Length: 423
Image (cartoon, rainbow, N blue to C red; front, top):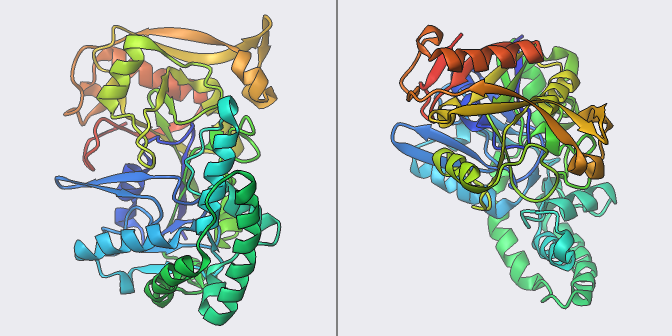
């Protein structure tokens, strides 16, 4: 039974959406298993760009069904909006989408709390997307969360929501923030309930039945490994575990059924929001890469911070996830640069230090150890064979593969589905 995972090995925004969409052509099911709508992915189909935050990439393929499993936290308004877009595109969701009743909900008071806490931090802001992710996860682990299960019995949900909203409104009051209008929000949620419930199924059974029947499963990771709740430079993290092990807790598939782990590595580094970024670039070079690569957040629209490729961090990601293959994305964006640099390690106070040894304070102070490469001037976006790439470009790719000790599956040189170089 082929069960494959696609993970971002950096700080998110590695181009996973395109790769999942590409691999999903041969998949029976694509599964989103963690995170919320703070992650965004872009899929280009023909001349159209599609932006999604919850529904898995690959849903545009006729044979592929999409599963939102229990590890995902749902903003029902965002989910309904994405469903509407897909149905306008002619996608029959009734036969293609199923949602776990175990998914926790992002509710209006979560978003209000997220913004209130972030604003209160002042200069110490984390860079949260203010989508309610952290507060929703906080409720989940403190037994105050509400799930899709809870909206099935509407009268029971009214009581639970009202109780939680009153508590949250007291907290919001201490921040001087307008409280959530309970009756108004319940009216909205009731409409969303009717939209979502027909798609609610036991996704554990769907996934494990598919595995038993040897159907091809593709697991779509959100965010990046450097944002994992436990393995990031905390507190600059997302609210979920992004490592491959969260497939088990977030979907119910036993981890030993996973047959391949594909890691996505952008040819340079980017991140949205606060937190350390050891190889960060500034000025004209950063601006040029950002503009050429369209490096603006899919979720927030914020300009992404830019840096050289950090292989010390990527090597950690490969090891903790036992990555079998990598895909390098956005290599075409580096065309025209006379010199490229790659970080091969860190030093702190003159001594070598590994990523795994660093908290956020240490990672903020490390000095990158760089290896320099000659760049290339040619436009490589139309190249489809490795031997046709400029020699300097091939050297860059070969060094990445050798340093990481992981096979390169292919290299992406454009946003289109077919803009790939096979090795």
